Length: 102
Image 1 (cartoon, one colour):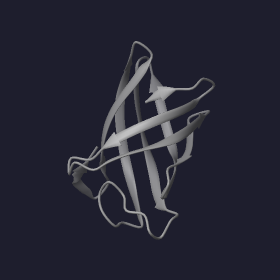
Image 2: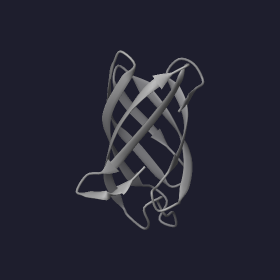
Image 3: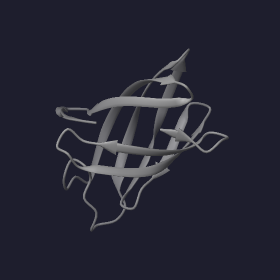
């Protein structure tokens, strides 16, 4: 996750199935909103020291889009990570389908 300043981030992600994607996030007071070309994201994040954890509801907004996990209309992504040298790295899994990982 790379910051563009003032809580706006460009994120890249890859599933354990090998699919990749990218999008943008805005983080304000622990709340996250964002999107990519086919999905919107909303949720929360908690940062303590150099560690973060949170959850995002990921919802398809483009009927032709496919997520990094396949053709899914909506899912909850639980994430956790840390910050080193100003760059956040994270991993996560889909709630209820823990075999689907980023």
